[in-house]
Image (cartoon, rainbow over all chains, first blue to last red; front, side, top):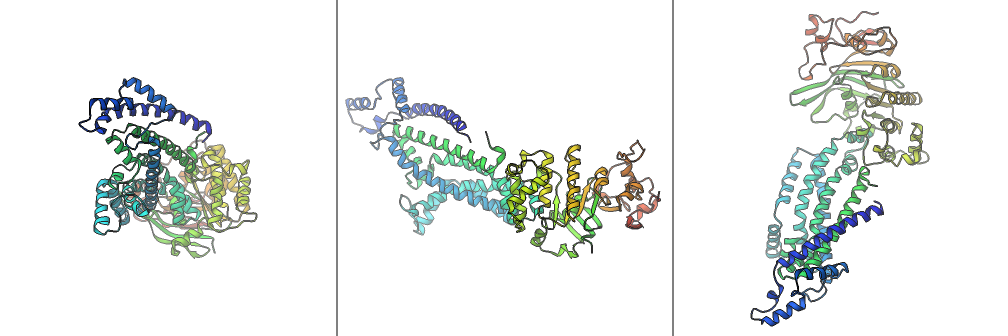
Length: 306
Length: 323
């Protein structure tokens, strides 16, 4: 990937980001007036008006927008109403947790799916294949809030070996990772299985056998690399979803990630947090897409772009 | 002892419309330094023969029901799966028809040739990398150092087929099986590939099985020809005898149906009808429904492959008389 190609991509991404942030600006303001939420019910009208003036909410929406747009251009995301410090600082504390959680779950799911999907493809039609099929269908379709609650019930309440929620050492990561792991694993097993069956029936696999390659080499060196592209595509999509936070899973386990921050931000009408979160996630997704393209090119020489 | 002996080989496949016999008692032998052409229409069992020798018959749906394949006198069908793999590529090599499909699209051609040495634990003098580049040079690829790093889609069809051939002969096999190596190529490129195979044959003392339906290529390259029809060998002869004096009516028909420059005949005579449905072969001789010489006996008794002259056999109740 050349540098000019990267710049072109970045320019398009910046346009998309501007449109995204503009719609975010108007959408968060549709959630309601934060002043009503932050001041007590019996606060005086004067106090309400004073807070509106302080937050700049007394001016016209258009005037607010131009102010905000100017701040955006200088990458100033404002002060969080709830945390009372710069919103981007709060976001940048939560983002690494989410990225680590998503990356661990996805990498584990990808590796496990490659193994299981390949084994199913090699034994396609046999009982191993059918077993893997049932398992992966179940993993792909079980809702993660249910999986999370059952995990808490079983491992935290009944066996008391894992914490119910919170954040700290590796032990706090086990249940969230397990819950986020299930759906990508199930989906990827199905995809790897399908593309591996196709690759194993290709003529070049016959060539590899004719050359004297044994089964393991034929499967994992010759067929697998040809079968990886669809799995990488889907993993990229899933990574983009996970960058926005493990949503329900973060909430269920009280995991301090960007998903929980975003949901809290919306509930607390903390406009600055919502906007800063969306911005940070969009930038991460841009880099995930670049990474997926680079992976593509390194796996298959035919898709290398000039 | 022959280099490779195939005896009474029977291979069948399960299909939606029933079990079909792809090979029905095929026997032939190959000597060192000899080029044996397996000649026949598609579906006659040529490629299945190659697949059986290379242990590439997909099982299921295919199975080798009986017969024997001996290499240097050793029975291949009794070896384990991995013992067969160790022989393949190393001692018995296969060149495929369509090199674009047969080369792995995601590895460089240099890597794919080098793999041949690596799989079989060969350490050529000067290293694998040098051996690969020497080989590419020898088969006429210009700028081999750069080309070795390129991928199959960056080569022309003729070059890809040469690379396929280079890969097959890299570690010096005793038997080279070429499965229609020129079929997918332009006529001018075909000639170059045939020349390359002829050169390899002269340089090495390997035996070569050349699978084709192209009489021109047979005349140019083969020493001996086995004509196949519906899963059986119907005639074997040396290449001159076959062209001058074919005995089996199918061989005669095949020769008459393709243009030749060595005779005055300028009219092509097609064989009437089409190759029989393998699910429902005619009783007796499978060729009888298309044969001008067929009589009542042909529908009742399958003609065995019998000696009809020194070093030549035909499977016909009423063979064409010697010219």
